[in-house]
Image 1 (cartoon, rainbow, N blue to C red):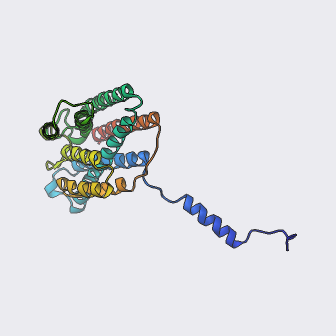
Image 2 (image 1 turned 180 degrees about the vertical axis):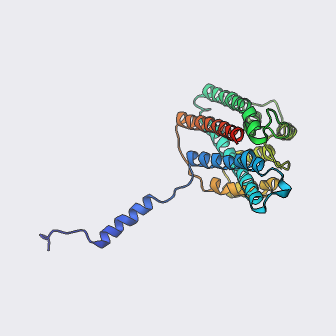
Image 3 (image 1 turned 30 degrees about the vertical axis):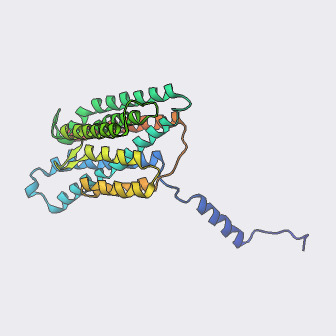
Length: 284
């Protein structure tokens, strides 16, 4: 009956509810989510090393439950490594997207990135040592932020070597130079004790390996994830748990300026977290 007014029934309401649920469905981790989760994981490690371990005092006489909690919080922080490595590589990839249209702007962005990450690494070194070990300068483990400029420098040099404009090296020479550059980066991480945790987990070495895998295998998702999982063996497989967040990432088309601002905010948040834990250790 065409003249009758149609009222919404339960089926219509259910359809709208299902559609709304679909729209609200989890679409993956964006840059903000990845960075936030990584910062929380880093904070868990600092909670263990700056508050729980000093509170326990003599670890041999400490309760097993408290020791277990401190260890769990520590190893949770290792899962942040692949997330941060992916974000660094994603930023570099976005900068490379400018290279064809604005090569000068791309080169300038890489230089600024190297300078900014170096400044953050230097400025946060003392707060990290104070929060982590209570010492002004601790040679047993350097600030994990040091891995950022080292890894970025290695990737930028590898890109320059592979550039089509570079015709001075043969294929064999190019491969040899690549091996030397990667080896130098890994040695740098190892010798400087970048992000060494519990005296056994080489976080800096692992971070650079993740960056290399993500950089060269970004177009081969399954191979990239498989190799990245194997890389996690360096950290006793625990960091590979962080690959779940990387795998379920959201492919974002962010504007360059907004991505840069977000990363600057995340770096500032990292420095703020260090200051908070320095104060917490001092007050405690």
